Length: 289
Image 1 (tube, helix red, strand yellow):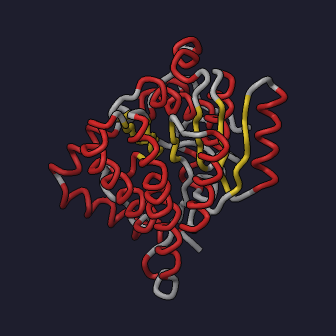
Image 2: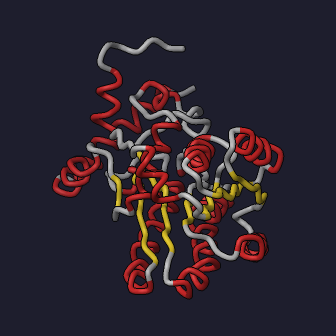
Image 3: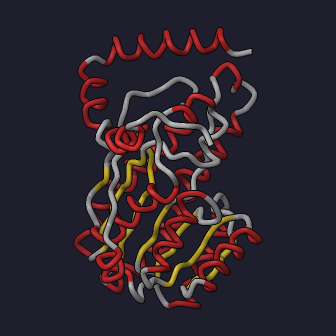
């Protein structure tokens, strides 16, 4: 494991936040609740599902990888928790309809939806001329699929007068845009705005929303980008703490400390910021093989 300099944990906390909800408060909020977590076979989703199960929630695990999903569910059950695996491709609207039908048939309702599944892509526009499918796939996983899942679950939530939607987003939708991340950030931003819009319509019916603008998390998703591995970031378990805080406390959003000043400065100095990132893109492009 790479040795970190002294003060690294403090730097991680100052940049990405270190929200942690006490076990007793989380237990009081989720015990005997049905919580559906997408993207729960690995990373943030897996860590979130395990912590929610330890707090007494019945956790419904959703992802494409059936074997890994069942392995996570079995770990939870061995530890004394309740979990059930629901393999599904969230990029397929028909699969989402089938998923929700099975879930409601098995459990009657869903108290909390944690929309965590995501697809990351880092590619320049020059390398995307013949790859429009990258944009389509990224939108299917990060925007269209999550929106479809919300639409499928909302009628039962509104009818019961209770429900909570947690969007695990990215701090990147709140900070100045970066080259190579166009497809990813656009898709995450689309779902973010969509959810914020419908929140105004569903809150009077007892359905609330929270968005976690997640900072850097060191997972399989971030590994392919060498620069990200060197920056201060959260572990999946630390990220799961933030998601669980959103589940229990139902804040409007959870935002890393660096985001608000970066957002303000990026808007105030938009042109120079764009030019700065343009120069960074050109330098890093020349440095790449």
